[in-house]
Length: 280
Image 1 (cartoon, rainbow, N blue to C red):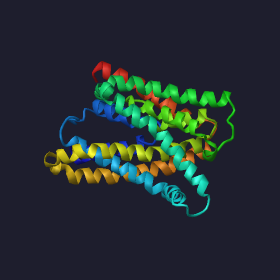
Image 2: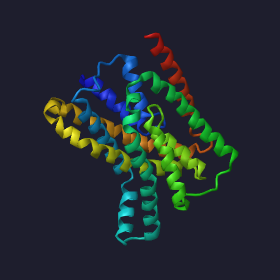
Image 3: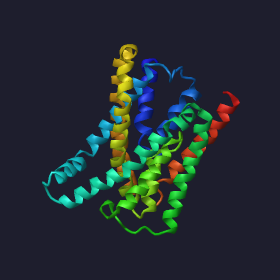
């Protein structure tokens, strides 16, 4: 992997992890379309991806640090709104449970899908349909005007189930979680905030799971460590900027916020299918 490809990969990861367009789908499709010579089975690739996730998780923690600090203070019985902060933390824990359980059960059975650009392109089109369906459902069923504080534990669990759709390459974690939030009666901004807060422990947890493998391949990956650190910094900066942009975007475009992303996924997915099938 050259430094240029590493930086481009980091930029793509930092943006698509949070934009509702599937980072996993892009990580599979884009290298195939651009003929990047990346061996995803090489011992050095896993530590590289782990470092990108470290950068993304750090960016989310940095952007939402006050939310996490308030939850920590609430857990310790300090500060204001103790019950509200404890309630939010409990909802996040409940929302994370489906990803932990389903990820453990399905990781190996569906792992072979991760390396197929064609399958990722198909699911990217499906992701566009999911985003569009979320918008249509919200328009037909008036939102209940709730905020995150009004979400029940059942609501949180359902949103967590939606998030698990991202185990399929091409379906977006943030997009599915936002759609899940819309179906429970909250607006785009609240759904995005909950989705990003929920993503932090999921991304961090997935990183921790891969750390033993990283240590196992430490000798083989030592030569790429500096490049991986650079990529992690780039991914983190892009992820922080993406989060700031998206939170403002969802606040200002509540009526049709997911529409452009749905169109992008559909067009890019179809175009990718055509190009990949044609062998271009």
